[in-house]
Length: 370
Image (spheres, rainbow, N blue to C red):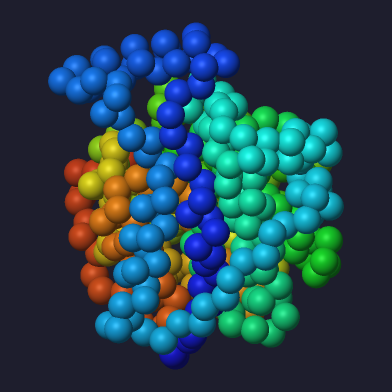
């Protein structure tokens, strides 16, 4: 069936430029310079370009606006209000980020930084998720993709890290509950890096099911172990699937079939949100997922959303730092959301992540529908 998914995008998010060094924290600068010298011995620090750059969005925007793409609906973002942000962030933290408007500085040794346009961009990124949720919950398009930056899933309730200022997907989930009465929201995070901030925010909250596949620790941020399962009333609503470096489509889709789908069947969400990072793409860092893997994964998520939540599915961009991988991965997902059929994915029976998926499915079996 043909669909016309909603794309939320705003050029103002291009004004986030986390570049340069922070003279207020010389020890951070020194630590990063030493790391760069180790990783790129043939380059000088002056040649370093921050990976969270505006070209991440322009590559996606230009690809989705190509004449060969199916028909899409486009909307600009509106900034999230401080009230919306404070549903998941400490009010003092929101005020702190507000105080950085017009400034340029680092917030963390991991090079999370702001430039004069970053606060507005961050509020637009969070607001884009809110708009997408409103659209799919109010009988608008059933599918939406928020093309946003800065990303969000590393931001905790009271700290910025991993290039993230506000936790966009958490803000969207909280909005769905507060504004639309959703009692069960599912967040699936397929970014290469564990969504530590999202996990922390909802760790004791049974109203959000958080399922995360990622490159296993000690890979950044070093969290996301099997044993991290939620606590208190939220026990069992955090499901982590840590995968080894080198995992590809087979591990990704096995996670979908053996963990994500059974978890959804047991939880029966009213809305599915996705932290959609594309840094697991083979052109990017340490994994080997390709466009066929992302397309098939999206097709199966569409099936889940049709089964449990009247098709309501929102993808929100997280990481991904290779322009071609970002454009290709996003195109693959959006084509499926528009009703195209996924082709056969490229699979590898020797995928090193399959053993890890077996372990995760066994460990989490008590919260998976058989």
